[in-house]
Length: 297
Length: 314
Image (cartoon, rainbow over the protein chains, first blue to last red):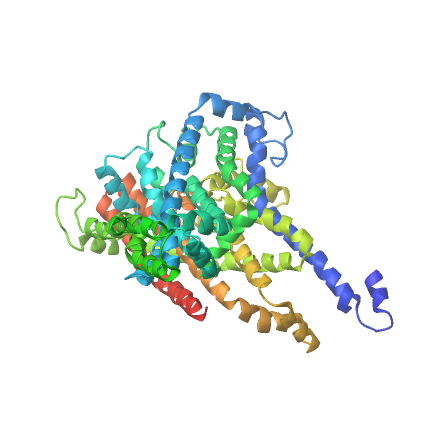
């Protein structure tokens, strides 16, 4: 008991010693944190090992389901890529996401530049309105959207998603970009003005480079929302050539009563991979964007 | 003259060569107002066309009959009021939101403290791992939970039975089905609270704790008199945000139970989807989702007040 020895002649239990207590608290933190991490990670872990199991092992009730006991197989992944519409869903999702991110960023950057630096009649109201729009959940408006998309003849076309996703993305992106743009010192504007910059040059040469972390955070947000959206494609799309990953995986990989669990888990993991990989590489930007919504004003 | 006819966008730059800075500054300012509005125009059109208009359109739709041929006033709302299923959805939505938000906040708070206790070097990895549930699209991760809750192959039940406990009918029993959707929502949402609270903890100046230690404050006193008051704003706004998102949840319930067993796990969104899109009664579905609005508006008002306050203080 090293901590007890450190407390020496004082007749106190070892854990109330300052250093001992700190160490004890550290061990306890690690222990409980470990439990929470197990709670957070066991579902993806279980999905992963299921996707590598053979069908025979998945359907057998004998043995521990939490480990792979038989052969490790890539059969489910191969099947998914070669014999289902999964690659089509992937392509559709990429097209929708790229377009939505591009459109949303253009709209957001222009609006944020204007709201951060120029005042015009109603600009304060507009900024508040943007924030309120961000609070409107997609589940409030999917029924009128369904009618509107139908009226435009876009039902069962992934172009409908390109039309409606910006409503979920633009308000938040504009909001955090206003925050980032406002924090750029006005001296930079003036210096640029002296050098003869116009608005467009000021935006591309000063605001966008200086607010790059904010722009990356906004892009990540736009990407994640478009990739993960579920209710709109579920309501709008039904043919296999138009489906996106979330809905395609949930609706077409579950076939009747015979669940192809291995394939389903492999599909869910592959569909989830791009946001997870993006997060792994850009964690700090991701977190900055996450906290900016509520902590930046 | 030619210069005066150019658009605002070019004026400031074209004026470059001649005239003093003062004149250029005035012209720059003059070009601003119209240009500012022009730059906001795409956003204004987007919000007006695809948020504000659909909202009023939803109100109009909710007052039509099923075939959308006749105006029936508030009949759809009255019809819902008379249905016990609707009241069950109301109760379940409230139970779901309150329980899930409370536990998400609690787990987030505890985990944030645990991570904050670690040496700074190690924090990154733990923080990175704990955010994984938030990063996976919920519709997809819920598929994994669905497989974990499978009546025959449930891997959670395998663990329970190997410890001698009874197998749990996760998605077929009313209580457990409600428990399951809430559990998955907590699993998905707790990391968001964790990140927010961790950011809040990091912003509390260390000197406050040092001073408190000198004064002999216990860990509990430091938590109650320093940490909580300093985090109050973040705790409040995170819970308000999360309440809106949780209340409007769709993905988890839709994938895990589809509202079953016997409609007991339906939330407003999934119930509206079932009535409006699946059963084809668009007006009734629109009426159900509109019921979310008053509660959402209330919470939005609280958030806005908080945000306004902070903007003023800056």
